[in-house]
Length: 153
Image 1 (cartoon, helix red, strand yellow):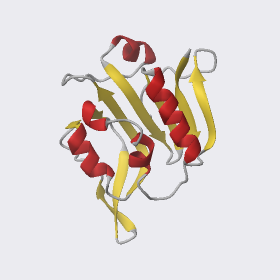
Image 2 (cartoon, rainbow, N blue to C red):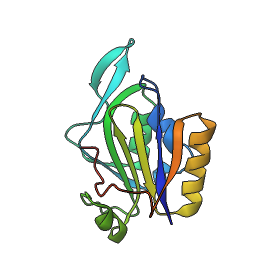
Image 3 (cartoon, helix red, strand yellow):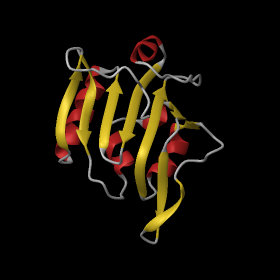
């Protein structure tokens, strides 16, 4: 069974999070922003934190505002939930039992992992990553997924 996708993005600033999420309607989800290290780019330099440090849950419309800002991602942990209730999910088993539909993790600025429970949306995300030319794109399956953690740390 296909669980998600993984690939490598360029280690530079841009709007990669927006690009990665473009095939899905992010406004349909409530988003939990986990611990990470992501910055706004202002005048070609690192600025303040991309996401508010005092607010860990965003509506999809709020998230869309942040994703339009040029950014430099070092670590990111975004989880999309149906409905308003979110919880801290740290394992794949917990993810399966939760109302979390979508997990996006970025590690070391370029290693991206996306888990998605909806197989049609997962296919769209895969096609989008391929179209964007991201390297080492592959599906995560029951057979090749050695990760048990749903965090970038």
